Amino acid sequence: MTLRPDLAIIADAVPAGARILDIGCGDGTLMAALRDDKRVDARGLEIDAANVTTAIARGLSVVQGDANRDLSGYPADGFDYAILSQTLQTTERPDRVVDELLRIAPRAFVSFPNFAHWRVRLSLLWNGRMPVTRLLPVAWYATPNIHHVTVRDFRELVRAKGIKVDAVWYLNRDRTTGDAAASWRAEHAIFLISRG
Image 1 (cartoon, rainbow, N blue to C red):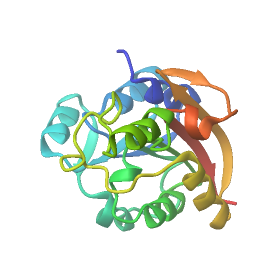
Image 2: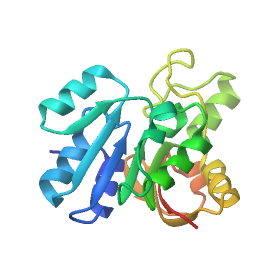
Image 3: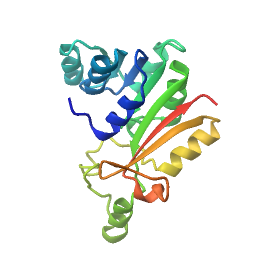
Image 4: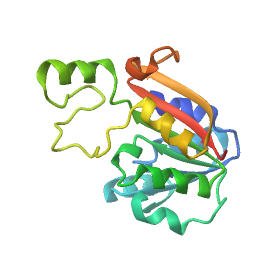
């Protein structure tokens, strides 16, 4: 099974046999890969009923729920890793969701589209409108994205909270890119964070 580039990075970094909670797990593609390739004990939380049905049909343990309200029902340190991929920007209070991730597990993967990417900036400058790009493919009024997070914004959030950044990967055109000028060059960022 071919994983999206950000999910492939996360899958490579999760150790075999880990216990994970994938929040916003979609149809369970990452969970299935981790289960099959690394014998990971994978659980999922997903808001979309059709995705939950698909994940369950794959034999995955997924419940329907909302990251904004349902993370508090999970026990502290119930998992080794929490995963929040391309979901942070859709939550009502990303700062509180990050707190919940690190309550549920000592380490968390958080990935998000970088709204400060140069194409987004250029579109705003030239057109004066919210852009529609490959990674942000819908108009502003139809997008689930309610917080336009950037690499620098996320770094500031974790710094202010005393959260440790263990690793960072940046993607540009689905390929990893370096840290130099990532705030405007990276289309997507993946952070591995832990309690400070």
